[in-house]
Length: 129
Image 1 (cartoon, rainbow, N blue to C red):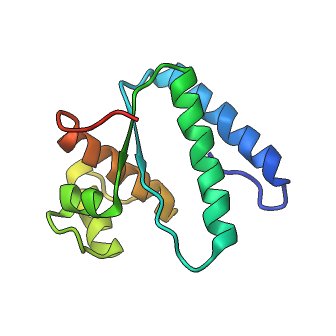
Image 2 (cartoon, rainbow, N blue to C red):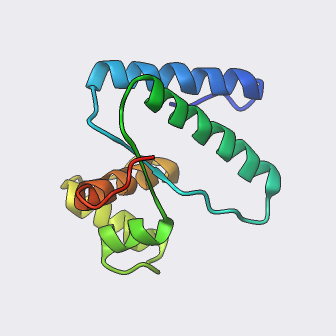
Image 3 (cartoon, rainbow, N blue to C red):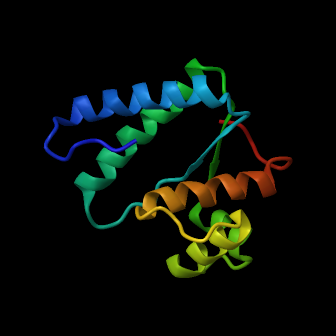
């Protein structure tokens, strides 16, 4: 679900919407897991991420796919066993758990895999959004 950097933000959100709908229609997931927002120093980035996350939540609702939210600490705890694990530790465990030789180049993709693993480990305790 990559968008072009030079493209207007509304068009990028539309592409995200369309891609999410296609993924749900194609793979028919039982659930969507998302990471709770972590605000850093860059307010513009945080706002853009929040808007993109909103698109994902709306598509999940519209497609009747239960959506679950996890904090970064919960995801790290579920994947690594330690809530303060660093990004490298999370990446290594995602590779190990999924039994793959290498991960996608984008950290966000690995983060989404970690959120899915967290949901798989936590789903019986999760609260639907």
